[in-house]
Image (cartoon, rainbow, N blue to C red; front, side, top):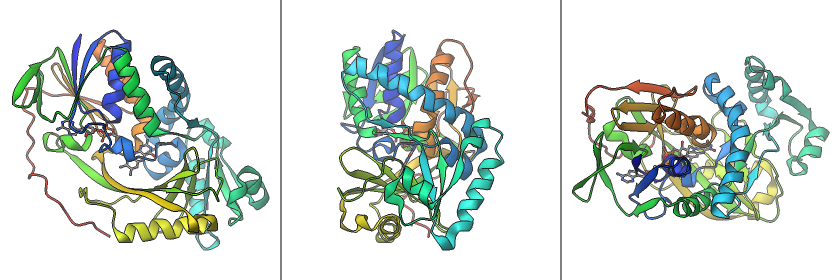
Amino acid sequence: MNIGIAGAGLCGRLLAWQLLRAGHRVTLFERDGSGAQSAGFIAAAMLAPFSEAVAGSADILTPGLQALQDWPAWLAQLARDSGCAVPFGCEGSVVVAHGSDRAELHWFYRRLQGMAAPAAGDCRLLDGPALRQLEPGLGAFTQGLWLPGEGWLDNRALYQALDGAIVALGGQWRQGHTVSAVTPAGLVTDGATLPFERVLDCRGFGARDQLANFRGVRGEVLRVYTPEVQLRRPVRLMHPRYQLYVVPRPAGIYVIGATEIESESLAPVTVRSCLELLSALYTVHPGFAEAQVLEARAHCRPAFADHLPHIIQRGALLQVNGLYRHGYLLAPAVVNSVLSLLAGGEVLAPVQHEVADGPNLTCQRPPARPRGIKP
Ligand SMILES: Cc1cc2nc3c(=O)[nH]c(=O)nc-3n(C[C@H](O)[C@H](O)[C@H](O)COP(=O)(O)OP(=O)(O)OC[C@H]3O[C@@H](n4cnc5c(N)ncnc54)[C@H](O)[C@@H]3O)c2cc1C
């Protein structure tokens, strides 16, 4: 099939790669040259099914655990297709809290124990010595919760590898092309309608005006560099008002995140968010005091009201969106659902499949306007 994809962020790139592998012809349209303005590029790219199920819906636990199996196989295939290895870790993650916030840690643990998945039973509380044996850098804490198997991947290396694989497999890139409309017959860019047999709309937050019950949820992240701190695993700090996570990358880089604010503003990171994130970071390990702040970025997580991914089917058009804060975690379920639908099959849980009548894509909502950031 001849397939046009609007948006080359996380979802668009992964789908292009997998569809090319399945023998389809693919053209990928991206408004920004490299995808550096996508949510997937700034994300922490944690693969954290336990933590995300506790923070959100238990529906994502089983598919999230499945993703921990799927990603290594994907990355091995991607290395063969692109010649690029993507750094990936799956040595579990650790949740910690300072003494006065210990109740938050225990609440987290109780929520986890209440989940039906047998794997949740492997998560366990560690005392101070056991915690330090696992992560020597966490000497500031006397207790921690160990979540085995949780992981992370280097999203920027992933983007680069996907670029290489898409080119190697014969995909057509149309970088710097804004898609102004998608229809079952094709997509509109630079004033022309380009016909395709199938159209996939993967514009994330950029598709907000064509989707009902859809919103962006602002998130801010920092990247810091320090050779003073050695953490092998993602660390999540529980706090009554905000949670912090620290996710390692190769060569002394850490991604620090993330705020979650009911705002669709794409404005730069605020002083308040920087202060909160960096103050909390400093309490995880004093060695972060001298860390260099390399980057501060904000984006909007694309979300439907139920916070689950949706595929809305309008004839030959599939609108694939709503990956919210689980884009990396649920990517295998979403991508495999699209492949399955194109082959006449069903979607995989927790992906929601809607079949819409008619080609009318405009939804009744006011045009996008910047809104203040709520505290
Ligand atoms: C701060 C933050 C932290 C996150 N951390 C994690 C995490 O740790 N783990 C996890 O699993 N998920 C995380 N996520 C979520 C994840 O990043 C998203 O769910 C995922 O990126 C959504 O993928 P997408 O392809 O739908 O959208 P995006 O990745 O945003 O890609 C959309 C693409 O479409 C392009 N586009 C938009 N409009 C147009 C147009 N009109 N024409 C052409 N191109 C267009 C954009 O430029 C972009 O490249 C995080 C998100 C944020 C914001």
